[in-house]
Image (tube, rainbow, N blue to C red; front, top):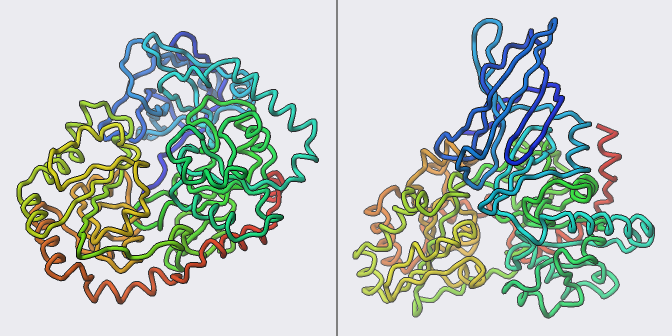
Amino acid sequence: MIQTAPREIKVHTKKFSLKRGRITIGFSWEKEKGVVRQMCLKQRNARMDVRYPFELKKKEKGQQLFYQAVIDLNQYELEIAFWDVMVEVEEAEGETYEAILGGLSNRLKIWLILFPRWTKTKDGHLIYPFVNGARQFTIQYRKYDKKYDSYAFIAKEYLALLCYFILKPYWDNKKIWLICEKFCTMAQDNAMFFFQYCMEQLPEKEKKHILYVIDKKVPEYHAVEKYDTNVIQFMSFKYMIYLCAAEYLISTDAIRHFYIWDSPNSVYKVLYQARKHLIFLQHGVMGFKQCHRTYHKAGGNRVARFVVSSEYERTIIQEYFGYDREEIILTGLARWDVLENRASLEKKEILIMPTWRSWLEYASEELFRKSDYYQNYVSILQDERLQKLLEKHDMVLNFYIHPKFRDYISEFAVKKERIHFIAFGQQPLNELLMSCNLLITDYSSVSWDVYYQEKPVIFYPFDLETYECVQGSYMDLEKDAFGDVVHSKEELFASLEKYVARDFKEEERQKERREYLLPLRDHKNSERIYQEIKSAKLKSKLKQRLER
């Protein structure tokens, strides 16, 4: 099932205020379009339907309806999440529908950017309006960060902008490329391997303007430490100037990852996101996870160039993401340049790597423990049949925790000698993928890395119905997956035993599809990416908007 964006109504916003946790929204609406009956805050991407009502008052004047909606968030226990403002509209014919409240006026949007506002709760959380590119009303609730959630930091932003614009020709002439991975705290994915290629293969003149962005206090810094002269400290004052000046931003993630994650809106944040071109390196092949609502060309996360690995994937990006063919560069993933099959029958390793679930992103510890996700994997890890299988064939099982769930690694702890728990960032993922004999996953794109190495994959989509409803996939997992698809522990163990008996050789039917699904296997992906970026000659984002 292909996911579509929720319906939206565009109203004429008159007022927005946030004082001590009390939100007031005033707007008008043409009577002929219907009547707003109810309005609420709804938790985004929640598996359960969590919503809290506004008090809604209405006045009529001619053909216009005027509304004032008020909600006191002090009355509710909010989950850490984005909360969309939803309305129920009754049309003239009596039919009703639900939609997101949109149409945040440009004047109000600019006001919220120039004068950011938030409420700090007594328990150390922050509530603030998140102004997105679609001009929809969204409220974010998250933990307070004393380092960045202050007026002193806003002053630092303005000072960085001043220093940039005073010497703009000088900074722009540097032609800076900034490269980063998730939250600027990682260095083990496509961005790091592309950066590594640039540092080791390019002449000094070409690589001096290419910089890797990372918080040097995180463990992952060691992966790029030897190139320290081309590594810049995340959120340093120098970095904030360079971010203003950068010619290209190059990343495995959305453009927001170049800044403080989920920070309130500010002039600085809006300017850099509106002006900068992003080269999207991706985490993995687009196949088992629908992302077109996040990365659609018409959305706020629009990219300048979209890296893909095959014509098959390019078709997906054209059809569902809205990009033109020339905006999609067929290069292969940078991290595949160093992939080699290091699996050994003397040291047999099974890798389990489940992907994350959007409906559990901000789950409490109690909710996480009750989830199908937690219950299924703990059940597998505690099953004596698994332990006997590992002992019988002298194997170890590495359970790799997705970064979204690393805070819960202790919850999975099973005291078994042959089962190892690895938190994201604790060990390079590339090494685990190369050393494993077989991968067990649900929908993770790392399955393509293992398939690339001609090793077997077992897909275990125990919650496929929910996943298809909430997240969705471009490939039909049951028909198109390049490995065994199982739905129970019994099937999982049977499939695992089959591949152990085959010395982990994949089946012929999977070999035949590799040339079509993964045509580029010459270890020149980073070289192709570099040449594509160098020859791009992109127009400024402002000119592109004027031409649309």
